[in-house]
Image (cartoon, rainbow, N blue to C red):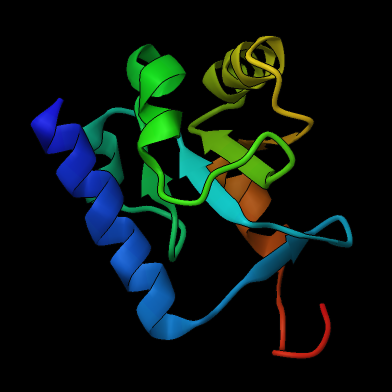
Length: 119
């Protein structure tokens, strides 16, 4: 659990340092969550994504500072199977705006960088 918290905090510090946010299908995302394993994440991931493996998502999502039930959360994995399960998990926990981005390689070209004023 300590390792998971450290990974989440490091990813959030990286996100804060760049100040970069993205939109997906026209919606600005508050956080991008990679639900793959830590080894898969280390092998490559979408910039500014936070790694919370699917088997730790239920508790791990609450470790993210500032996460709220109305935060816009974008999920992805390798093929889309785990991210679909993750979406259902978060919706059952009461999160309102959860999008399943599917597989990483299909998702990445669909992300649009937001400026400070608009997406």
